[in-house]
Amino acid sequence: MAIVINMPRLSDTMEEGTVAKWLKKVGDKVEEGDILAEIETDKATMEFESFNEGTLLHIGIQEGDGAPVDTLLAIIGEEGEDISGLLSGGASAPEAKTEEKQEEVASEPETTDEAAASVAIPEGVEIIKMPRLSDTMEEGTVASWLKKVGDKIEEGDILAEIETDKATMEFESFYSGTLLYIGTQEGESSPVDVILAIIGPEGTDVDALLASKPSTAAKPAATAPKEATKTEAKAAPSAPAETQEVVVKDGQRIFVSPLAKKIASEKGVNLNDVTGSGDNGRIVKKDVENFVPAPKAAAPAAKASSASAPLALPVGEESVEDIKNNQMRKVIAKRLGESKFTAPHYYLNIEVDMDNAKASRVQINALPDTKVSFNDMVVKACAMALRKHPQVNTSWNGDTTRYNHHISVGVAVAVEDGLVVPVLKFTDQMGLSQIGASVRDLAGKARTKKLTPAEMEGSTFTVSNLGMFGVESFTSIINQPNSAILSVGAIVEKPVVKDGQIVVGNTMKLTLACDHRTVDGATGAQFLQTLRAFIENPVTMLA
Image: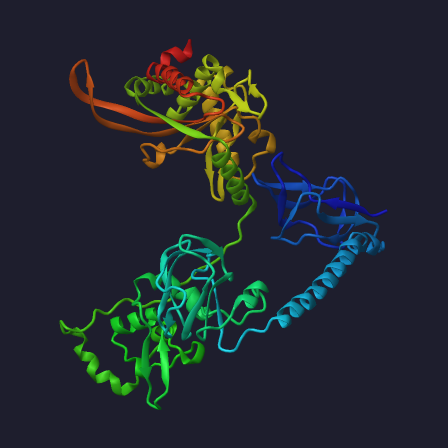
């Protein structure tokens, strides 16, 4: 009988997995314990073994693809076994729902069409909607109206200043007539494509048109063409306010967007020689940027070096590349975002004298088979300080605060794809040499993606160190459910005052980020005082 294998949950925080590599293909014999695939989780890439034997009949998730936990991953059964029922059984219901939705969607346009047909747009009336002035704009705010109801509008007049998510831009009219209606008042906001204004012949009654709310049946809004909307809006605030009319050789009037006119002026391009690609032959930014002068115009170009010639601006092609985020990046984004925006962070800073620590480390490392780093000393000091300040060793659980009676310090380790936090279990019971050996072992596993979920779970406090990169101080985001994280900077040799004398000393800056729901400012400060005492006097950690 065929066995369905679903995407496993390989860590407590895993919500979806990506198949990094299949080690078996359809038709291969599979024995119990064989490795089927390598699956990338939010924390590591792990081998996934089969607990069944038979023939691999179906692969549900291809290499490089991701899927939520419990999604069909593979089917194992007897060679030649019919699995069509397993593959189609879960699809019938969604298909039926899809058909129902399609029927509902199909019936909606009829209602819309009937509503649109019931109120005809009067002749000469143009409905202007809130334009999309940037690629990320979802709504706009009218900063100011430069025209009022009843004013005469000429094509190219500036109607209003609209504040988008990126800038405040002038919005021009592409129609002539009388401003009959203003839909969004100064200081008010409305989504893109909501009625902004109506222009038409003087005296036209638009009450019936407004009552019908023709947001879907209206004519195209008087906004910039699509290509201008996406590419020109960002630079529009500095563009000239009016639209320039140009008479081409055949006597036909064409129009130029403000940004295109500005670029043409800067580049010395004669707009009479440019062919517009916008609506009604309107010249837009790309027309000017892509314009190549005829060969006969090459001779005057020598004047470009003169003082009066316009400054030549660099011209290039913008290029982007979208790279699919792996599971680690997705989880980093999700969990740190949740932490930053749910836990009220505050930060405390101290500067620690490291002269004694440096001297002690030299003596400790002189012992056979012993290697201790400054970070190991900080981790040990944190564990001992947490024992004296249990409020920092807590977790916020909404209605309760969990006091952890054990101390397990997580150490942030940078890896190629992001960041992992292996955990030193019962850190306060470990010696400096034990901490050093454990950190080296876990960091090595992290960089080769060999960490197990158990080695990354259960931290009660976290240490992050960027001192080896020369960073003197920084702030970190709390690794929930911890209540605090310590950021460790570089040791810096600098002038310091000791016994009233300026001498050369070594200092290190520490920044403690605390969750104000569980750790008050005074508690965090007292923890740092204790931490300072241990680090500045390492012998006390050996007692």
